[in-house]
Length: 147
Image 1 (cartoon, rainbow, N blue to C red):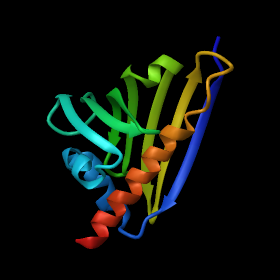
Image 2: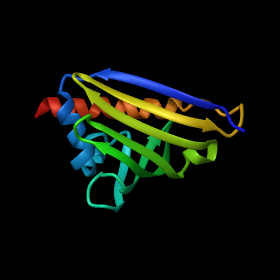
Image 3: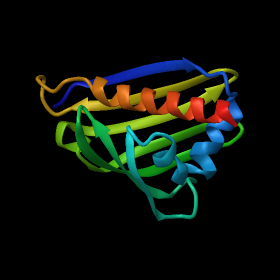
């Protein structure tokens, strides 16, 4: 049995909750252009936009290596500005039995939560991955502030 964990990080956003949520909900395909140093590619495999039941994949840079993950979108709540992503394939599942992400926006705060279960005690917490997510979030904020 692995060790379960949860990482939570909140970032104050100057661009407003609605704009950041909209990028992930309806314009996710723009993220590789906005944060090209972190996100290499985004693709929707099932569904038209990020909505409950969609399957999407990402290629991203982590510690100088290109990584891959595929997500099943478990929930999207536009009123709460919340998206839940479940990793179903990719590099993270080599280290973790499961890895789930939640992003939510409330007022000026964007919060990312990663819930995971390590396969072994020696497996590190996904801090590098959280760093990629936070860097991408700041890139999106900077992009939105330029508009």
